[in-house]
Length: 248
Image 1 (cartoon, helix red, strand yellow):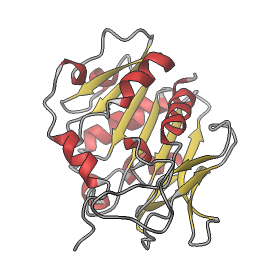
Image 2 (image 1 turned 30 degrees about the vertical axis):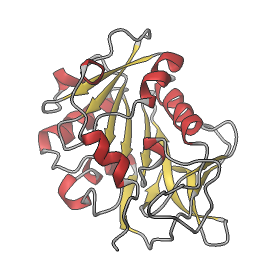
Image 3 (image 1 turned 180 degrees about the vertical axis):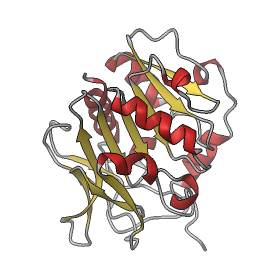
């Protein structure tokens, strides 16, 4: 049986959701910051937990359903690329790079090759000018989990889910896939700060951004019919990441 009912279940269910008013533009959420959430490259709608976070953190989400161009990104503080699986055109890559160079922040989340093919999407072309790069798939350890260390972004160590993903090269690592013994190993997330005020976070695994993980999850084991991913801190982890990205 080929890895049934993994993190793909949640992502697939999001893809099946209709674009209700909350998935078009959240004008009713109080807050002066705007997140441009790209949906023109095969991404699922944002998880519903993003709504509650928006109220606490103070942001609005705008669904980007067309090509990314300077006009489309104008007025946003953050561009969020969460699991794109269609090709970013050269003009779109340049628009994102220019947005960041002008002081805008960027959050990139890419999962395994079976979901998002790195060469097809071309996201490394966007982040390499800022000293970051995503690897291909790294060897999978079932439900190994990851740890985000207390530092500039996270106020305390955060346990987050990890089950197959990529290494992030460059920048300042702040989250690490755990090895079989539970020790921090390869970087699974890293950040960069630019002199312009721009902030970039790149993640090589998507489960934390889907707010998966439960307190009763047990590392290195999984029940296919009822997966309980190790990593209980996805919500606070993502909240701290978004606060840091928007704090400029």
